[in-house]
Every structure is written in C-alpha cells, then in structure tokens.
Image (cartoon, rainbow, N blue to C red):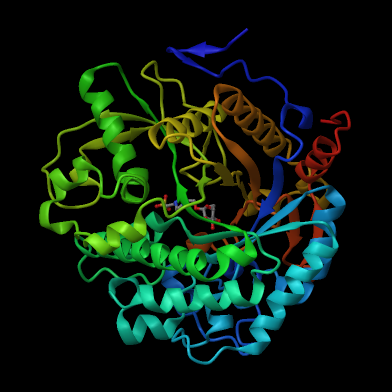
Length: 486
Ligand code: GBH
C-alpha cells in the first residue's frame, strides 16, 4: 500500500533489487579531485582557488584543508580495487585542471598530471570500471582567478575549451562519458554570491552570480563544441552537464505556492538547462532580473543549443516551497519570493535529517525530480551523478570503529532512493545510471572533515586507512543480486 501524507505519496517504494534495472544500467560511485586527492604540491600541480580559499581558516569550520585530503593521489590503486571488489561498474571522478595546466593558461601541459590520470583511467579499465570524468568540480587554477577574474571573465570559456581539448585528446580514447561542469549553480551562488565557497568573492554579490553562471554556460558550450568537431567522430563518447536539484513540492495547492514552486525550478535548473534546450534563460528570470541577466549572442545560442548528450543530476534532498512577499530586490534569493519549508503543513518533518542541516531524507523527491526534468526537457538521457547522505564526525568519534561502520541509516537512504530511481524509469524517465556520493569520506568543502558522506570510512587519525561501512556491503549484495543482509 502506498504511504500517503498530505497528498504526497512515496510511490509504494518498498524494496529494490538489481533486477529492477536494465542490465546495462550503470551503478557507480562518485568523488571529486580536491575532496580526495591531496598531493597539493606534488606532480607539478598548480594551486587552485580551493587550495588558497582553505588556507584562510575562517572559511572552513574545522580549519582543515585538502592539502592531503584522503591521499587518493597515492592510494588510487587500493581505492579502485575496492570499488571493483564491491561490484561497482563505474567511477565518476574529476580531473584537477591545475594538474593538467598548472597556471590554467593552456600553453604548457604538465606531463606528470597527464600521467597520473592515465594511470588512474588505465587501472579503472583493468578492474572493469567505466570512467566518467568531470572536467570541473570547483577547483579553478588560482592563476586564472588572479589574472583574469576567474568565472567573471568572458575569456574563461576559451581557457576552459583549451583544457577540455587537452583532456579529450589525452584521455578520450578511453573515457567515453564526460561531464564539463559540476553544479554551476554552486559556483555562481556560493562561490561568487554568498562567498562560502571558493573563490569566496562577493564584490558585487548581486550581479556576480549571474555573470559567473553565464560564463560557465558558455564554457560548457565551448567544450561541447570542441568535442563535437574534433573528437566525436573518432572517440564516439558523450558529453553532459551536471546540475544540482532538490525536489520542490508546493507547500499548499494555493496558486501562489504552486507558481512559486515553478519559479524555484526556473531559478535553479532552468537557469542552466533552459539555455541549452530552449535557447535562453527562463522567462521568469528575464522578467525579474532585467538587465542583471546577461544576454546570449546568436552565436552563443547556437553553441548552447542541445549541447548535452545527457543531463547529470545531483540530488540529495527535498523541500516544500511557499510564496512569500519580499522586496523584489535583484538578490538571487529575494528575487524569487519563495520560502523553503522543512515541515509538512501538518507540522511533520518532510523526512529524517542527515547530519547536514540542509539534508532531509525524502526518497520520493528523487522520483519526482527525475520525472520533472524528463517532462520539462523532452525526455533527455539522465544520469544520477550524485546521491547520498552524511553523518556527523563528532558523533561517530564517540563510538568504537566497528560501530562507526554500522551506517544503517545510510543503507535505508540508498534503498529508498534507488527504489525511487527504479520507479522513475517505470514512469518513463530515461535514466541510464546512478552514482552514490561518495565512495570515501572526504573533505566536505566549507564543512571540512566534520561531515562524512562515504560508503567507505576513512580513519583520519590512523593513517587514513579505509574501512567499508555497512552501506558498502549492502551495495555489494545489491549489485551482485544476492539477498540483502540488512
Ligand atoms: C554536492 O553539492 C557536491 O557536488 C559535492 O562535491 C559535495 O560533497 C556533496 O554535494 C555533498 O554536499 O546550507 O549554505 O551550507 C550538493 C549541493 C551545495 C548542497 C552546498 C548543500 C550547502 C549550502 N550542496 N549546500 S549551506
């Protein structure tokens, strides 16, 4: 029987097995370079904006950095072996731009960086893991920030295209799935607006996010064009963009709330996908932002049009959205005139909370998000490129190691969310793959090491040793079609 609360159904999600998915459906794990690699000054790497941002101790809650992170740079073989042993078929990792071009300018390639990723990719293939490579997961070469202003510069797309071309040329014979940019909204809003992410720049917190978003879109399109014109025919791979999207459920059926919910989608996903699928920013954004929203030239439009072979979706949580009247200032949040609510109108929480304040466990929200994107953009191919939940390090600290590995809440999270993906496929969404975030506990950006998202526990105090949690074991049983032990 379906569980229905306030008209919201969980879709009858109960249990899930590998056989609910097509054979060629991809199950993988995801990470990003700055969060796991470490080796900040090794292998000829240049600094990225995150290297410098985390040097300022006010920026990271536990005053940590990714200088060493979980030392994946040196332990990649052990990590990949474990992924393969658990039964995963794919690994989504990101390439550090500053390992390939230390100053970002695209003139002098760093051979040591190329060798590192060659080794990584070759080892993945040897172990039967398909590589899904992200070109940009927030670690812009610092030199591009200081010399041209990073994502605020209209020159950035050219540099990004040079970098993308170097990656396609060096790795594209083996990498068949490329992601240009991870969650451009986070870079725009948190990197250039709120300033809680690198580069932490908020000189014009009003205008800058929209400019940074615009240039990320143009950079994405430029990289897509390079692939299409120079590599597609010989390499036959696919290139996509990853957006982050919470599910937004209307708080009530009042027209104002329903419209506010649609507006939120426009400002979050439409901001990036409308220019790609429809040729311009959403009408609501144009209306409310006026001149603050940059314009696309005819050429930009042409390059952007259909510039994805798939949509990557990072999804973690859901909210109720209600309309609130705010002074319609051109501020990213205020201009949206909406409020995110964590409770049902009845007063019940939307879901159990994970460790992060923003993360509520709402499996049905993923089903709805997939269906929404599918309908909105005419059934694109979709990969769920991130999905997962965290635990509080300070809570786990109080426990013995074997108890820390017993992450039953996370097992429940994955069961529920993976079942929601199976439901969305039945509903007609063209979902091709699912990546759990994250393979390992790692550097959680401004939260440092205080939040643990891993399937595999990393013992920060004892030589960074790796210990699979119950969720990793659950995955392993799930993937191998064995009866679940949890
Ligand atoms: C993903 O972003 C990232 O791609 C990944 O690198 C990261 O580790 C993972 O999520 C887990 O966070 O409440 O103001 O502190 C997901 C989008 C962006 C959602 C930041 C939470 C916190 C902002 N996340 N946001 S705030």
